[in-house]
Image 1 (cartoon, helix red, strand yellow):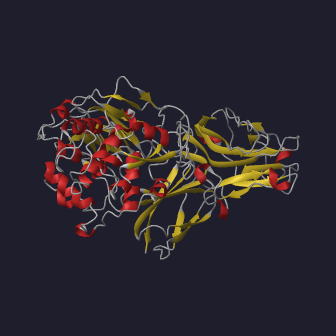
Image 2 (cartoon, rainbow, N blue to C red):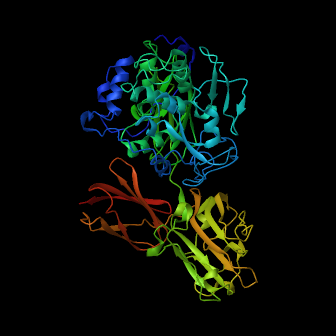
Image 3 (tube, one colour):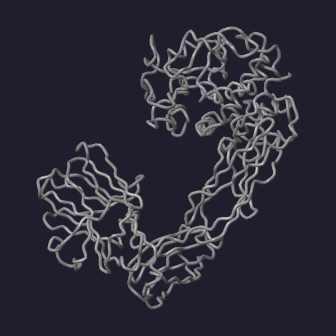
Length: 637
């Protein structure tokens, strides 16, 4: 068919990033048009074991609710409100709170009269089209969770575009006379966020059920008179235009992978969005995109950089951008994103970057402008503690309890993002009076650094007791801390729990300026105190660090330090480091490609490391202490 309207949409779409098995689409090489459509039918059918890949397995209608509730299914709202409720394309409000929500397996229809009563299963290709026959009725890729009332309002009407609606749902989906060229009847229009999702689902149906198509099916104003076309021209034009307007999203990618697990086939148009125009475009695209322009580097760190550029233009659609680092491809970015974050770079290293565009016809643009960047130096840590391995002890803090038997202790999952943390829980003692300190195990030397910055994460539940962050230049590291003068760390004030209930309150400090601190022997401490009548709060801390810039102009260099490394080679992946001097050391391990694979800091003169999780081979260990560094080679056998 001739789809002249398609050429009017000079819009971009993403290239798929789903996880199709290698070779899944091997029979499509060099094919276009209906030949490609029929080849894809073979890949996703239920009757042909193509090249050993699994075939479509009909799981039945009832099992769809289970599929919707699967982790990372795409049918749970992990993308907008991120509240774990059912994701319904007809009620999801993108820029605000939904008017109502459903939990999986609860409020299933049944009867309904209004929006928000219950949810059921919506057939994007109506059941009346195929006489409710299986496997069409049960196909996860076009049967989605939906509010029952909105599903009923959509009915068997085709999709279309509406300017004068006679019905509008809570999120703006609407029903009314069609204004898209080619049809004047009543249609249903979803919101823009999900138009591409729906279009690719309906076009999937045209591929998957090409052979099942028969004359007994009801047209619903959109079926063609033959299985190759499947849908009439105006409907194909509409679906392709929505496909171009709304590129593949992460939600669709997740749903495609979930569908593969559930019924053993995939939606090829999510894996390869370019297939849409290769089937229904009816043209040869031999015009390359314009090159990306204005390539820039932003947010340069010691190990990463964010690249951004002005997007390319194309006569049909840009498919993706390819990013090169030092003339080697390192990644791709979808066409609707004009940025890319490069990670795992080496500190204080010069890199060259450039970008080019690829369109749906596999035409390559010229390169963008090239840029050179130099990554920053590794940060100098006065202290750095992530508490991730705190069950085996911590190097940088000691806990002291002055009043009760309670004390700070390791918790394996209460830290930031569920990681390890250190916690003081006054409830364990039944609200007894408590005065507990968590103090740096060694004094910090602020006099050889400048521009010191402090970062930490803290969380509280229950009560109203305050967590204080203090410092002292008088504390001797041995006696009760309360016998010495302490002052508040500047520019940081950890709030009390605002509600005092069991809700989780978090506080985060990122690179707070504490450069007014000075002294060669400065102790830093968290003080937890309920002796003043405050109600006990469960406080947890994590990811505590202080960084600074070395004072090269007047720093007094310590004696050159050294360390011994044994056993080397290591047969078990475990090895020991013996240091010739005390003080804070940074331990970093790199593979032969220069990628950092291990990082730790310690005050110990003898340290054991375990790299048994790494592959066998040659690695390099770099130790930094104050302004000195030393590198040695390690062999893991």
